[in-house]
Length: 315
Image (cartoon, rainbow, N blue to C red; front, side):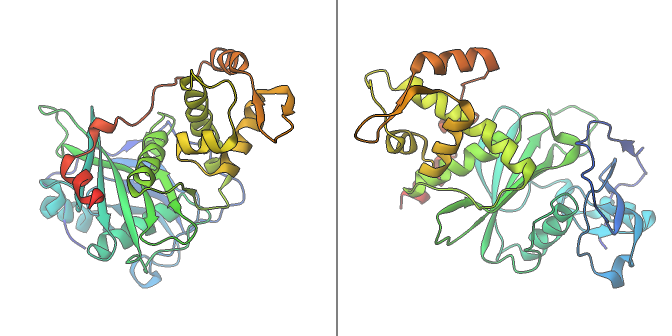
């Protein structure tokens, strides 16, 4: 495999992890990503001839996602890995505060995307694309570490989502994952927000590929609820709203808007007018927002997009 740091740094055990799903039978029991050790959830299709049928600990490079079952070659790889001193592959498309998004073409960076997909499968039950990555773009969520810290790399990939280059169903996201050590920080909504901004830039309404996993459904419902509530309360000059009005304002599929409204339970006593328009009480929306302590601020700032990327999309 390729390489890592001159001296071995201590391996930290991550304690802030999502509970292990039931009925799993992973072939890799634990993974070391850089300096962090944590449990895996599901089986992944790493080549048996390289890691064996079952391994207790797999070492994965935090920069290029190359993998190895032995510590010594892993440390050697970290010392020489190009990603140690360079930004992630692909094109920077968004940057705001401590986080950035890089767009990576699966055809141009096949090995990186294949290794990333194999790593992700350890935590995704329903992911099936590992080697045929050319038809997808990958969007890396990167944490920018402030300069002057003791961390060797100033940029760490902490999650990603993938998106088909050509989707007949207008899917704006195929799979999404925040790596376990960085979960429960609200970072998934940044990637969801980016996926909808991409839909807006492309000029068509879309949504995630279905069916969603149980964890995915929970995450999307929270994201959609905030998005829909913000849109409804933002339409100050409208006394009646249709599902289409909300869908267009949010760039969401009508079916996702309807399921979100039902979950929020904010429809008026009379759910439909004679013309089929849904009756939504803005007072109930405000009450719902207050009761659930929902932050209505969009997770993505349009001004965070790189100007050159916006120009390319417009073209």
